[in-house]
Length: 338
Ligand code: ATP
Image (cartoon, rainbow, N blue to C red; front, side, top):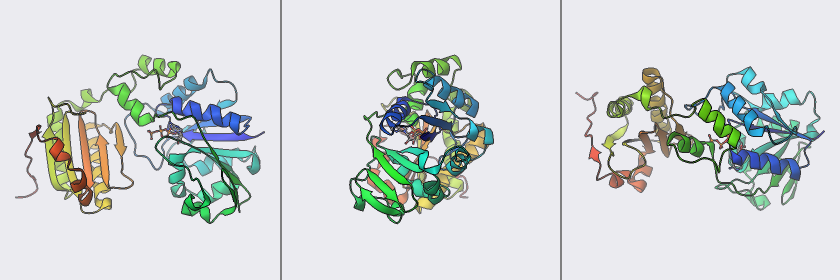
């Protein structure tokens, strides 16, 4: 038995996932693939959305017409807390030999693979299959391999690498499907069509259970909410905190807050502080958070409000404020300066 593992947040499962599963299963000749929704990805910030059980249900719906070779595996959700792939690999290793176990990840995950807990152990206990994903490159020659992998290579043959651990890494090219769960959540929240990117059964379940609705009801007055977020940034020594009312402009959002940090670390922590304070005060999580790992431009999306936190140096490069010059500057003052 050649067994695959395909983990993810599946928030929600989309055609990019299905495309990868179906193609990899065929191309790599896998007998079955465990599809494992994470309880919480340690490398992603928690975002607003369905419960873990609902995401599990969504994955079942997504795969129910694709055959028995795809096994929906709830072990990470059952374990709860932060989900580490090494634990899932270890549990499947009880039934499968390491040479027959294949961890499947997209090129985006491959880039950050060295941040995964015990990644070297994972590469001892299972083979790795890396798929293409629009927007990310897969290595075309040995030189382009990420540093963490270079040290482990025993033999390199273009799309196939023998590792010193006894396992291998193979790259599989997929037909490009340009979709991410983040994008799908945005489409759903703004009522735009999703039939091209979601399996029908997933779309129906989302509608029936009223998932991915705008968070406006809980936030109430967005102008007040905007001031609240700006004040959190002031309190954590954000630089040049400004807020704009963009209603009436052709902007993707109604309100925007912008601030910067003195370092990438400061920028990430400013954004994290906003997320934390909003959770405590409003019991609302962002719809998405982007860029928090790098801390150059962190974008916290609350639907009608988007909070941009920059590393100050990068802020100059983008000059977002220029785009908003026809909006209304809320002229907020630092309440902590007497
Ligand atoms: P998010 O936008 O919330 O970060 P996501 O779309 O990346 O989510 P995940 O559930 O985190 O979805 O992804 C699970 C796995 O599917 C990952 O290995 C990821 O690389 C892969 N994947 C997701 N979308 C695509 C796609 N469009 N093409 C190929 N692989 C994909």
